[in-house]
Length: 418
Image 1 (cartoon, rainbow, N blue to C red):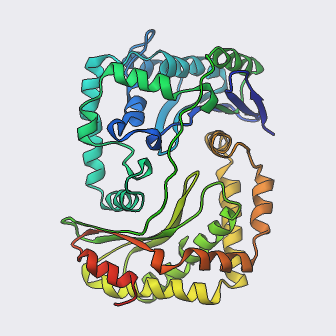
Image 2 (cartoon, helix red, strand yellow; image 1 turned 90 degrees about the vertical axis):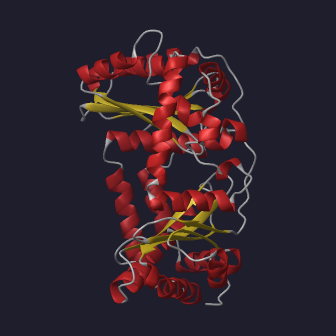
Image 3 (tube, one colour; image 1 turned 135 degrees about the vertical axis):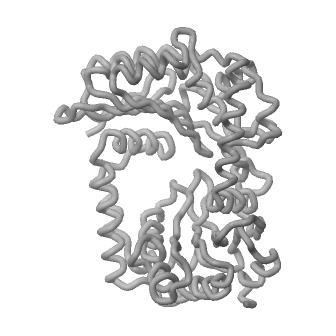
């Protein structure tokens, strides 16, 4: 069972102790990501994530790496549209040391201009790597189109034009403005001495109170985007307005996603791949944010197969909306989802992530029993009704990357004209 403490300055500390283990996972979760950036700041949150590994007042970049390796630990970080997380996994005998390393990185980094110039080149290479991955390009262009003009539609990594303007002083100031106690969650799971929790509270309780940054709400707008690229396959993402990750219907959406395109027994996989042999990969997924969301169907396939595949995908969705799921499909999806939850929370890393992400985004942490109960309570009527609310083709969008047709071709498909 987890324990939660809210410090006077707003920092939340959540812990779950399990003395049967020998390891612990620690995460510092900050509620700021790319959607908190202005257009001129695009990529700042991710750039800062990189810079915190480049050396502090007390440790060099090499020193951070060697000290972590010397205790057999693992330290990493990631940036999303809505948060940044710095995390580590170590043996229980080294939790205090890795806490000191992480705190030093997050709050004492140098932001040396020479390191900024070096890391800018690394991030530009990272952008190039993503540009060479067609499915990533397809998804990024989709978000850029349906959330055009919003920070939610801009890439997490930023663009070369904005990255070139960043200096060490700018990044240091940006971090000071966006890393606030109010939007900070410390999550610790596994085996650790009680004194570690006291030390966490002392360290983070010393931070000066400050209001967390806000962002402008985003609104989904139907769009079609096409990017011609020399690839062996065309990559297509069909999308509809989805749900916020705070929606009470999110569990019904998860079962819907599983039934429609969540695995080898899903309707899309069985019809598009198994029966018709039109593609190798096809699946559905939801991408939720605090105030909006999308539900998407992705596939990659040969250009000649595209017209029939799109028609088949559309028909599968239309049939689902018309008839709803069977009880057998719901039972299978429910057990699959429950198994994913229970098996996914068996490691310290996943427990730490579940607590940190849930508390930061939703302000509460559902126990595995709560989640199982939520899945068990979903009815066939709920899924059917939700499908009719989501799958309205007049609100559909499409992103296409590869040796693709024109925007007009794909708009005609969305209009039911092909």
